[in-house]
Image (cartoon, rainbow, N blue to C red; front, top):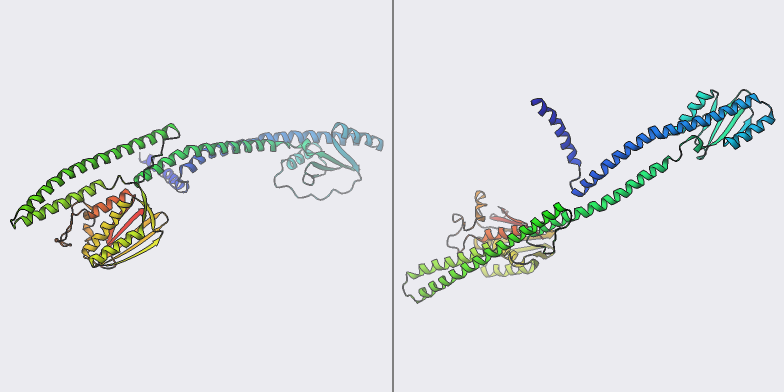
Length: 450
């Protein structure tokens, strides 16, 4: 068992290294699945064809040409007179398709440069050496359609011009062209088909991402292969169930809040008609109940039914400046980038107002910086207040939690401000993070795609 595990470890390490360099997208991986076997198959076929068929055909053609040349040499040696030579030249041209000439016994030219890759040069040279065994000079490079051969005999030099196709399988490129051409056609069809199959998956991913950001796409319809359609249909049904659940929860809370408001209104009316001074404490309790009910309703509702729209950040900052002036709190705001963002306007305004209002309540000075660009919105709010201990920063996002040890207990509030803020941020696909401020208090960072 240990030997088996040890043997598998290098294999796993190898595939882990390979996967690091593999493409991450499904479209690219699908293309590799289609292209890799095709290239491997064609490489094997081309190698076998080049090694066996091409070389065999070239060797047989070279043997035939060399036999014709050997027969001509034997005729020249048997009939050395010039009249017979003329008949031999005519017979070679008419019957053997070889153009020959008998020249004086001059020295053969020096060997020319050998081609980098030429089966003909090697095969034809071997056949001449094996069948004729005389000094020869061979040129397969000079003219692309003609092969020149010079053979030195005892009293003359035989010069032969043969067509390349007589000694070489010259139509091999047609096979290669057909193989490459059909591969390109099949590859084009595969690319178009894969792109058509990948598109429904991308649309499903975009619809799921938009729904997670609170921007549902009602035009999404399942398309593509059966498995993709099943996934798309499951997503649509899930989205409908979530929307129905939100609607039911909102309707239930609205009804509950209406009934409780009626009771609270009756309480306040009875308290107003009473003259007992002890009623003030009860009146305050009723007001706290009303405030808590309104806060809980806003938190539970989460502005989920609001449609996405454009919000002017600059106008929102101007509104916060006016609120800071009324509270007599120092406030500085800086906006970088496009002031117009695509969010759920009322919900996002409530998010920023809750965070900034929380800073107004516990600090003397507040600084806000907003940066919008590259599909992202980052808002940083810092204050010089008492801050929040690091081990309690996640607790403040829980509903109805107030850190009274660090805050003023006389301040009004239900402990839902930051809970609502994070709920709205996450419904937009973002989040709210707390950190230490450079100003001495709390630093709140809001990040949402916009």
